[in-house]
Image 1: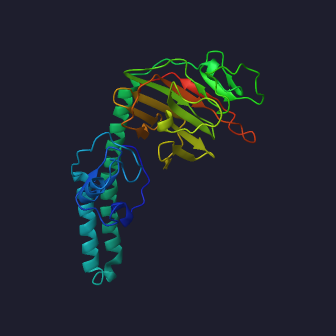
Image 2: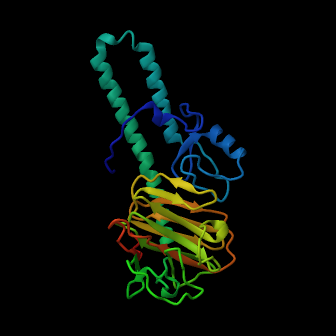
Amino acid sequence: MAAANYHRSEDQFLCSICLDVFNDPVSTSCGHNFCINCITDHWNTSNQYRCPICMEAFTKRPELRINTLLSEIVGQFRDKAQQEARSSSSELQDCTGTKQKALKSWKAVAQLEETVSEEMKELVQTALKRVQQYAVDGTLDPDTAHPNLILSKGGRQVYHGDVRKNLPDNPERFSSCVCVLGKQSFSSGRFYFEVQVKGKTRWDLGVVRESINRKGEITASPEEGFWTIWLRNGNEYEVLDDPSVRLSLKCRPEKVGVFVDYEEGLVSFYDVDSAALIYSFTDCSFTEKLFPVLGPSVIEGGKNSAPLIISPVSVK
């Protein structure tokens, strides 16, 4: 089991909805926990089934089951708190012994919670391996590239250049949005690709429908045919949904996987190296060809010069 550094406090046993200690805790597939009544009431008053913490959307209302392991942990926490409250006044002279007992209790709780985290990570790893089976061998289309973009000879890398090239303004080419489309399109089934974003402070990534606006000012949203996420200022991740969603990621992804299920109307983004789900667009309505879209963005003060790279997929 991997080692972990945990700091235990009452906050870690609180439901983020009612702000009280968990009562019959349940876990969502994105790994967050709530009182069963709290999350049920929350979804009863909403027309979408989203996690209140990370805002992941679910295609259908998840079937909730009591997280017995977390319930056990919370039970230990409650019992310990009650015992300490009853005996604190009478055990002041035995402070050292009490601390040792409490330390043992917290270690047991830490081990149990670490087990829960490892199990959730294994679930996401399994899901990632499954979608990686639909990997496609894609390249970039130079006829769609913004004039400032430079593509590698094999069409797998793209970065921003200092000089705007004098290229024909054909209908397929982006004129102001610093983006390029993949050469291959998809109008059915499932497909998956991975893009290396290591060393970047800004980028845009996702899929778009064929009829998107490629000239002038562009609003990226599902309504306009964009299912994308972006990075700005080195650590600000945002989903260009309607409305947009600010993401709080535990670590900076160096390789992002994009999975599309055309018939299910699903677009999911993964942090490949940490096997974590970043975000999913659900209940999308696809009626046209879809293309991968990459935006390496501009170079700012010598930063963000690294390319975006379509990487070969390796199933671990």
